[in-house]
Amino acid sequence: MGVVKFRVAICGGGIGGLAHACALAKFPDISVNIYESASKFSPFGAGIGLWPRAWNVLCALGLDEEMAKITSASPMDGTAHSFSFRKSDQSNGFTFGNMFSRGPMLTFHRAQFQQVLAQHVSPSCRIHHSKRLKSYSQDRYGGPIHLSFEDGTHGICDVLVGCDGIKSVVRNCLLREQAEIARDNGHLKDERDLLACTDYVSWVGSVAYRALIPVERLKEDCDKGLLVLPTTPTMYVGTNVHLIIYPVSQGKTVNLALFHLQPELQDMPYRGPWSKEVDEAELFNITRFESWEPQVKRWLKYVRRPTKWAIHRVKPLPTFISGNVVLLGDAAHACSPHQGTGAGQAIEDAYFLAELLGHSRTTLETLPRALQIYDNIRRPWTQETSAKSNANSRYFMLHYDDFDFRNADAAAVTAKLHELTDLIIADWKWCWTTTVGDSLKAAIQQLEGYNL
Ligand SMILES: Cc1cc2nc3c(=O)[nH]c(=O)nc-3n(C[C@H](O)[C@H](O)[C@H](O)COP(=O)(O)OP(=O)(O)OC[C@H]3O[C@@H](n4cnc5c(N)ncnc54)[C@H](O)[C@@H]3O)c2cc1C
Image (cartoon, rainbow, N blue to C red; front, side):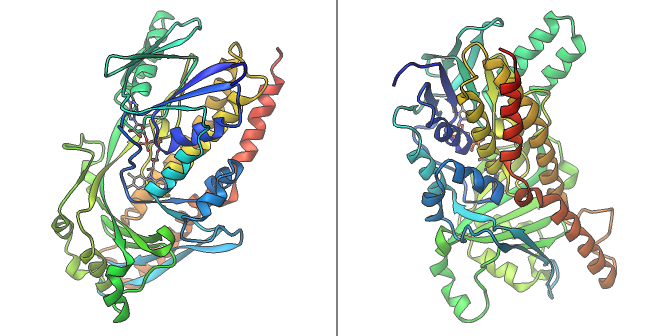
């Protein structure tokens, strides 16, 4: 490595952290260390979907060829049938909507996806496993950032990128730091608001049960015509419960996620671990699936030891930056997964930030400008898209317009479902009608427009 302009520490080697390291790989004058709390990269979860907007970022990072080998759809550019919506909490379920997008939602096995990212970080990037960040400290007027880890060791960097997920330690330190600054400047209301932010993660009142089902196990039911393997992601919707099914691992595996909402529990504290393996029998106690369309029960029959996730979100933060510390991905804006965009937004943040950090105008002295531009552009954008995803978490559970989907007559239900489909699609379109490139161009112009 030649002359180093500054040292970046990435806290967290999940999708966001690894994508950021991949995006920084093209800037040899930035040294990169990743600190990951787990002893190895071991993604927890099942499948993930990526929309064209995020896919375009993977293309810009040169990862498309490798990623195309492990996805289940073809990343083509034309019109794709990206979702089917079925009303399923009745014996004669029916398709009430179809969503078409420009380019498909590409689906991946999460472990394979993360493995490709890990293989593409620069060889000069140092990865430290079993390093759980406890806190950081930085001088208010600049200088290096000191990192303290749970194992008693320390590290140092010039920029700390908090990619440590929804329970982010970096976020909590950053908000406390900003509260102290507000207090010292006499802004007591801001101080109170910022301190309240340290409690800014809330449970949305729903849990997800996720499982991967090898296709060979489904063969008998498929041969008898009792189950049809999904080529298009399918959403089976009912009041307070919905199921999503799509293929991953090039069609060798089916990803299943069952969501259960208890609206009265929204924003209440969630008791128990946020994710854990449970017995499949728990699924059948959620609702009376006997009254649902038969294929839903059939899918559930194949689930073994699902992972149960309590779905939490980060409420809109007043800032993603403090000094030379910056948040990205779930640490900054975790949302409910009902547009399949959390990982995609983490990847966009990662790329966007790397392009600003790597720009020739960004030096140790001008770092705060680059970070301010990131915050000015990415924060409002991700908070708006998170709000859309959070809204879907209610729509897919048939909470819309105070309409009584259980008791209204069939014609009224169908009309309302069509209205709902239009709304869902209108809110989802940004995933394939917009690109991160436009906002990045504006960001670079701002960076270059600064007078040195
Ligand atoms: C049920 C469900 C389904 C989803 N489906 C989709 C989907 O289809 N499409 C999509 O785009 N998104 C989806 N998401 C969202 C997606 O999983 C997240 O948005 C994404 O993983 C965020 O990446 P991240 O790197 O910011 O955080 P994470 O993936 O949480 O990674 C954080 C990393 O930081 C490490 N870490 C944590 N604390 C510390 C510490 N103190 N020190 C060091 N390391 C630390 C962790 O071990 C982890 O490796 C889904 C989420 C859920 C719950």
